[in-house]
Image 1 (cartoon, rainbow, N blue to C red):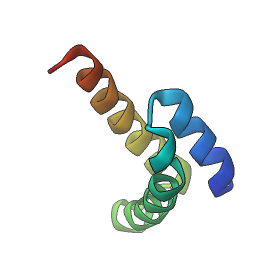
Image 2 (image 1 turned 135 degrees about the vertical axis):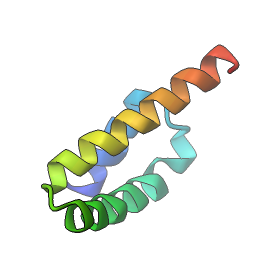
Image 3 (image 1 turned 90 degrees about the vertical axis):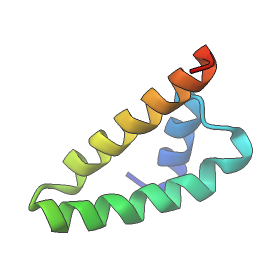
Image 4 (image 1 turned 90 degrees about the horizontal axis):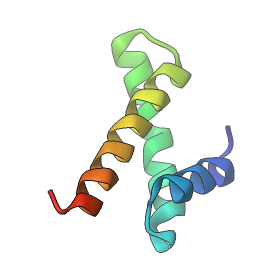
Length: 64
């Protein structure tokens, strides 16, 4: 997945449009770190991180 695709996915999950590109870069970097730390694939790390982001935006929309 390239950063443009990741940014588009973040927008679809509710990320503010002006933050998508920056967050995509940060998520990419963190997923690579997690994959190494946890001895798992980049994709597994990214799925986990995207799930956390989705939960956070959903909670924010509900006012939690």
